Length: 588
Image (cartoon, rainbow, N blue to C red; front, top):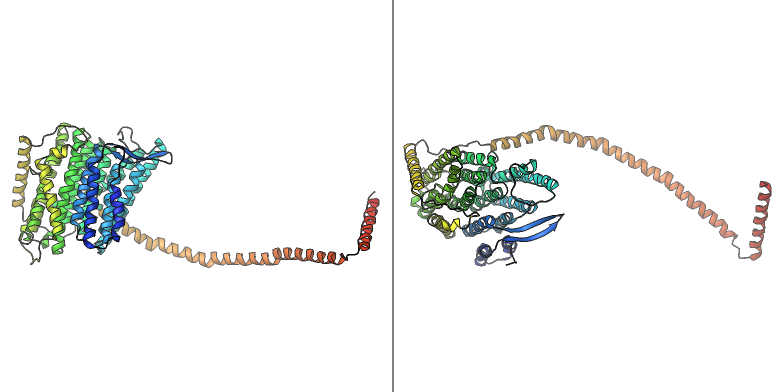
């Protein structure tokens, strides 16, 4: 099949048409129709290269379709449908438009075959997703969105600089696998830009700063696309880079540490994005076919169970007005379905057998074990303990079963939110029970069987030990309403320092220079203008006007000599002839 339709087209065009649909039922149908059409489009795709355009002596490729891009395309369009269903009750068209542009640009990024096309969609992702934060319409959201945008613009500049240097170096912008041995400044700048979007430490703090401040529905979208698009481009361009294996493994532990001590449900989950994406980054860094399959499989599974967790936390925030564990408790009585769906997501991320995390995360750990990376294996397993401790036990216990600090008026969220959670929970279970459905989508044909007795036994021991530790230390783990500092402290303080310098140094200098220019520069300019005007009026105009008057006077004399009498003209002719002869004789 030679024809190919980019699935991003549905989201871009659909978002522009949405404001013109006034009927509420028709609008909701249209919002769901867009991702359904994109799912059908992805299902009909065949591998190949489509949409190639020559531009500035290079080739732009909008449609590189292979198994690596398809596995991400599948989960993106599925998540787009689930996110749209979850947000179906939202009235603001702008919120849906921002979400559609966000999804469409993510799809554009994973199908891009060159750096320039990738960069264009990369930036649309950043500028569209920030509105999902700002639409919460609170001061904290405004501030967080501003910081989010600044950080991502910085990442985009790293990417753009590397891309330009790469073009001058190679003469093309083809986006393909980079050899670690041949990588120079150009490639590492691109890698840094990608790593920022993947929330690789220490470039991660934008994520737990921004995601908890997004709208309830926007956070569900945001947890799915930005970091996973970054995982895709890392898997495409930088597999086998040792720095990714090390930093990715560090991310798994770092994110879990902060998640354990956090109080806000959505901040706990945001830090767990850092941790879980760490597994994917580590898999890319290990670089074997099994590791890359594991990174892709875990990205697929993570998008679903993390979305489910954010849906559950969002439902709690939507119905109670808070997501702080210190203010919640006993919600199982008021929101039983929400609790069940959240628990499905919690045991999926924790790696319980029969759920999606069990069949994806273990693939990365197994690849590290195959390569003899024992330290990586131990740290990943340690992060697994922290994951179950924080998301599976701490949040579940204190939000849904803990003691109510104050009477809570809560109920189940709107039906569309429950349906979205129910379908997502079902997918987490289906992937866990029938992992072959996921494995068939992976880019490499590598045999892996998660349901072996050693693996099941290992996971059950880790989970049992974690459960015992939690109930022994439950009082120590009680949530506290406090601020935990991360590396975002530096750019927050840096921003304040810059504003202080601007107010104390730059602004006064700018004011002084402005006054100096106004008092001296403008006066000199006006004086020069007066002199120029005088010179023009007195000299230039005088010369020109005088010449004109002279010509005019001569013309008047000549005019008087024109009598119309031929004898007069003959007389003047003889007179001039005698004068000329006399002058010639004198000259001799």
